[in-house]
Length: 403
View 1 (tube, rainbow, N blue to C red):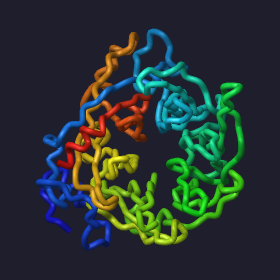
View 2 (view 1 turned 135 degrees about the vertical axis):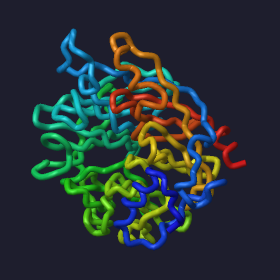
View 3 (view 1 turned 45 degrees about the vertical axis):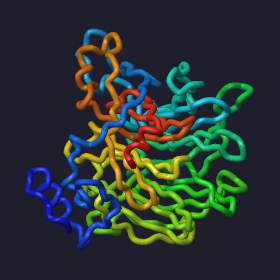
View 4 (view 1 turned 90 degrees about the vertical axis):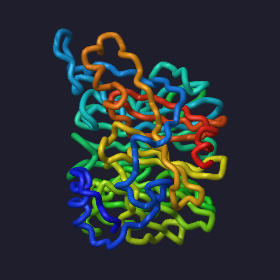
């Protein structure tokens, strides 16, 4: 393992990493100046990616908030799990919208649309508000056979993980004539995916699945029916010592192998990596990498410029207060990193007393989803889990990082 600098932060990181049995983390990050040593990254002096910022759904009061009460963070509606797509000439965004606290009963999936990505429509509901004790979590936008689908995990009580959750993955379809979302089908039992399915060369679809106990599998199917899938094991919750897998992503390489990265809830503050050489049917055991992560969700997409980008909270020191974009030319190794310089919006009327927590460098910026359209990367994100926003970055500015 690379020599760890004995600052307080690095010492904490060392103690967390000491539980792992790996002699050397897999080097998937190699940056100018710091090389493969994640503790040597000078986050303060990383390049800054400027762009254009807009609000999709503004912060709002929780139904529990009473006029005259002191406004606290748990007195506002939750906005999290953002997903974007450009379909039928419009941008679409869905997210989880709940009354208070993440994944509380009656949380639903809401949506908005935009013609230009910066000015958004009035908010509507995909799922409708479920009756207590049930709730929904937004799980992605998916075009299948030309039809726009919104995926939602349906579950019972507080949070989707645990015992007796009645966890199911559902699909809703957009009815363009009626201009509303309609339930289409249950997709799978005891399942919550991370991002929408990807198409395989044989016409089947593939997506990640966690069950209510955080065990990770892959689902392959969905070709003939929305509810017809075959399950393939990836990693169980306690299989790798110290590793607690969560929110996996994967992408297909030119040789048809699959490259996967995992958030780790076990305290390593690093990403884990696994591969499949048979299009998701079998997987290598996940291993620790040298890529830092603030125990948060990540997303990666290939661009039309021939390189891949990944957006994440890469600075463990500041957690989710900073958002970063990393670049890979070969789809395996990331050789550039920049801070996504998302500005702070002005305080809406009535929220001035608490707005410092939403300010630049203090607010959490998390759960990014990224698409490319018309020469830009469009990044949907959640501010403090309470406001849904979008940030547009020119691909030309990302090109500059590689020069």
